[in-house]
Every structure is written in C-alpha cells, then in structure tokens.
Length: 162
Image 1: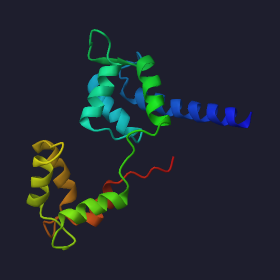
Image 2: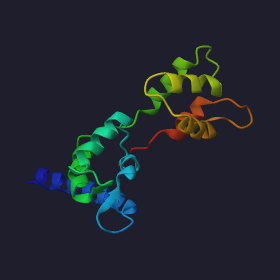
Image 3: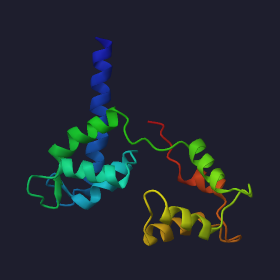
C-alpha cells in the first residue's frame, strides 16, 4: 500500500512540475505551446536531449498535420515518461571537467577561446556560430581572455536536487 501511495505521489508531483513548466509558455492559456518552445520546456525540467533526440520528441508530439503548436494532453504523458525514466540526464560536473582536461593537453588549467571553438564547431554535433558566441560570452574570463574551465564547469552544471 505504501509503495502504491509513494508512486502515485511521485507521478502527481512530476506532472505538476510539467504542468507548471508548460503553463509558462502557454501564452494564450489554451493548453498549447509553440513547438519551438518544447526544447526550452524540456530543459527547464532538467532534461538535456541532443538536438536529434529533441527532434524525435517533437515529431512524436506533433499532430498528423503539424500546426506549429503542441497540445498539453500530448506533452504530459510523453514528458512524464521521460522524467520517470530519468532520460536525458545532465552530464555530471566530474565528467564534464574530465572532458575539458582531455582538451587541455598542456594541462594549463585553461583553454583558448579559438581552441574550444574549433573543437565545438568541427566535431560531433557541431555548435552554430550563434551558439558558440553565446557560450564564449559566458565562458571567457574577461581579464585573462581564456576559458578557466573549472570555473566554467561549475557555472554550467545542473544541480539536480529534486
């Protein structure tokens, strides 16, 4: 009995979080949001899918005839499942720090902005120039003009205390 109550409580609380996040972007108060806001809503809930995963989620949520909007009744069960299965969890601070340390081959404790730009625009799922500019504006130390990656990692990791 206690397990069933606990599971129901977790589902109810999860769905309340989803509803609250969705409502922020439901500007018409008609239980729909612009499809372009779905990534922001998902990330606000602590999930960080790749762009390819995000496109798959959106394709699943969109109507047979895409309208440019996603309805809450389609979003809720999909997002509930994603959150309960703990999909698309953020990378841990330690793992992110290790990634920067691999890039810092001279073990200087920092990276040059050009160095990081090269890695992030030419490898894997490449960043756009706009994404790169936005990230570098937050990452580059204004006094030293380098990326002190330990500080940057601390600033950009997600504290999942929920």
